[in-house]
Image 1 (spheres, one colour):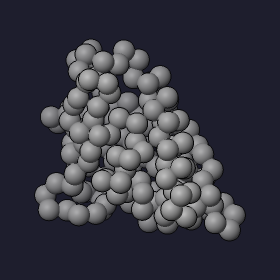
Image 2: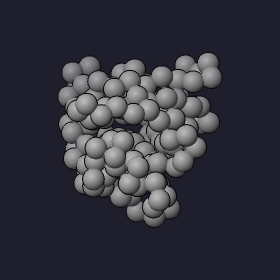
Image 3: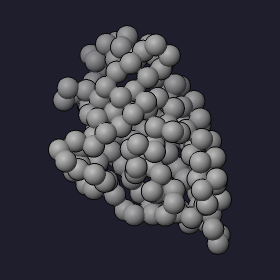
Length: 156
């Protein structure tokens, strides 16, 4: 796979298991994810597993949109990843990698890959109010990781 279009890392003073539990729990994820307003599992699924699907309700200012995501990777305490689509059109891939660091901490890396076909980009930009998705994702990832750190360290 090619390099992500946006990614960042942060040290978190919480065990990898607690961080994994946060990033793979859709209702809790909305407390720290920059554009996710709410996530809900589909097809009777109640937890992250490869192949599980969820609906993401997203917001940025007054812009609102929904996507469907399919979980691609689940490695407890280490990795959670999913592909996002809009009515079957590939949009992005998101991945959280968690690496134990020290006695009670970990390094968390959030990455995304823009998977939109070029013909779809203008429509997506209009729907989300974002002209430069790569730059927006860089800022969103930084904000998300700061919020994740705050939440994880309060519960650790």
